[in-house]
Length: 469
Ligand code: NAD
Image 1 (cartoon, rainbow, N blue to C red):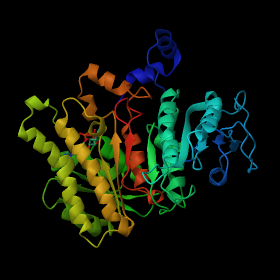
Image 2: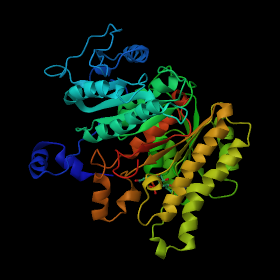
Image 3: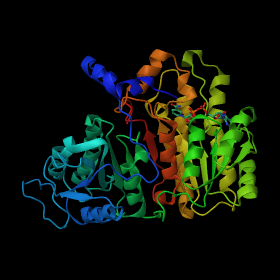
Image 4: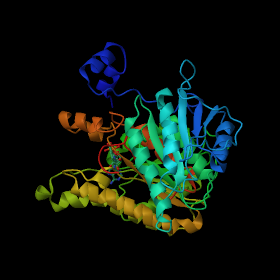
């Protein structure tokens, strides 16, 4: 689906006109291209200590040039140097390569005073950030077990990062990684999350945090094929976000089963051919949907490793005008079907080890949306389901996560009246709607072995939508 305004103001006289009139100036975002560098320039690593050193080692292992700024301690002294990487001057990149990313190693902070030296050091370099550059914080998740000062410092990171993300321009984004207590900075999923957030795969993820709960997971031997050998099922795959998910997972090496209603059979067959997968015509609200999916995956592909619950519908009405048919239809497709299919699959002993469930929720389920009580109930329900299912899957090394898209350019959003649609796609930090592939990339990451330590997360893919956290 085209966003003609973004095309118009991204180049030539359209850009100059928008600037003169003070209109929103969304830019074309950097998206994943197989074989392209991970980041569009050197990475500035801010912070000192073992965590920062471990991040430097990982970044260099990915062929990234690393500069260091050790920041200052809260009493003004420079933090002790422990690294051989060149120190960055403020404004590094001027006249030279612009910074591809700034990574803040904040895992060691213990008091609110520790934040200033590190965030201010990052701030001094922000003007050197390349278009579609990245700021990524790596810090510890605060918990009620923390001393109040530690909890305050850790929570402070979240507020600072979310505000910083709103200040970035030119398609740059800011996101964070929260490590549970005891999870090392270089745990597989911490590094997997860092790689994802730095890359073009996370183009429309902005102002968000991924929580790494355990040191489980494994980085792929080939970063271009992180799903090699996996069998994945995607529901609602005949068009829109579902078709993009199927294409992305296939590109990343997975074998695909694409599912949609019989009425969408022709479009489904086209997607199946394109991704060299198999099509399963199935209404997911059927009572035996889970059994049918499992039987098809085992019979045609010999296993099942990844289930993506994407199929969803809207039946919008103000609650005062809502009828039971509209409410029930939405909950049946968006939530009850997922619960029933999960129950059928998890009761089976035929699933692959480290089974992955990724559900598509919505920012409407977080922030609420006028006219969508039924839809928001279903999508908030999906998030609750995912958190509870994550706990059930933990024993077998499986994970359950959700992505919550904001405004994505699909046939679903093309049906929104023009004025509302134009507002909907601009009210986020990137001033544009996302593409289906942006949601697909987040799902691809959460479905990969690299995300084995990430479970029960809800990752928003919304360009940092203005509403809700
Ligand atoms: P879409 O309407 O373009 O595609 C949805 C697909 O699901 C269709 O192919 C449809 O036939 C299929 N489907 C519907 N009911 C089904 C059933 N009972 N059994 C099997 N398949 C069924 O929608 P989309 O925009 O691609 O949305 C995909 C998902 O993303 C949905 O869950 C939606 O709620 C969610 N989402 C979309 C947006 C957005 O901006 N487009 C934002 C947030 C969340």
